[in-house]
Length: 95
Image 1 (tube, rainbow, N blue to C red):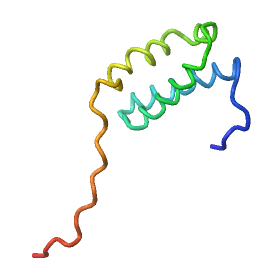
Image 2 (image 1 turned 180 degrees about the vertical axis):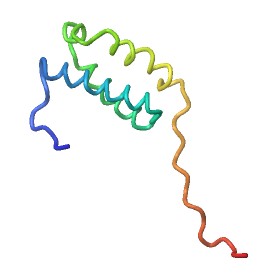
Image 3 (image 1 turned 90 degrees about the vertical axis):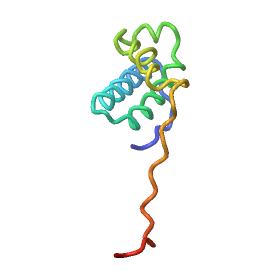
């Protein structure tokens, strides 16, 4: 996706937060935790820029998932994701 020239404001920002939460939930339902974590972090960063009135415009089901349920699984108290495994050493002896 192309970068936007100007940051979102108002209704567009609320709509983008809702979209990102829904994308994160779809990744969650597909058991794609790495993608879900990244999308949730982006949604949370945008959510934290909203005013109280704008936060009230986001459906409660999405707010609950973002702030509470996903915190249970992705919060700071959880073990961070492991690094990807390295490729097997090609210098293994042949039989």
